[in-house]
Image 1: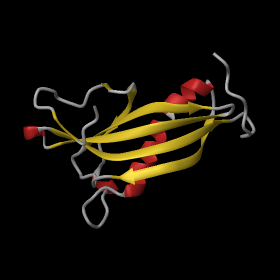
Image 2 (image 1 turned 180 degrees about the horizontal axis):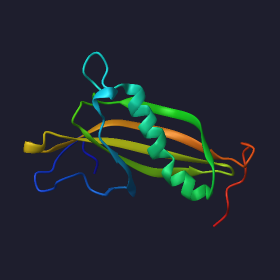
Image 3 (image 1 turned 90 degrees about the horizontal axis):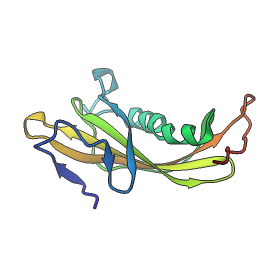
Length: 142
């Protein structure tokens, strides 16, 4: 069962796996250069990290080059703050002839003295396998 807020006083960080076979694919901490004028992390910076994290599983499926072809959904649930440690979890949701779609959930670890893990973003992204010239190519069959 997914919770928007997970209290983890017994853990030093978010888990490596979440329910539903979501795999930890990236963990990163935003830096001061990533802060906007309001003191929050730029949404575009978070989007770029989701694109990097989302590509991990499709690149394994494609066994080669991939390119982002669509951002099907992107939801910012809470702002990301300086000092948050972000954990990106991905799950393949669809494998087509040339493309792979993934769902990415992003959690922020906050307040180390009273650790909270809060879901801040989720997205659905589609990647396409490409050849050396950048044209779509069929995915290898396992």
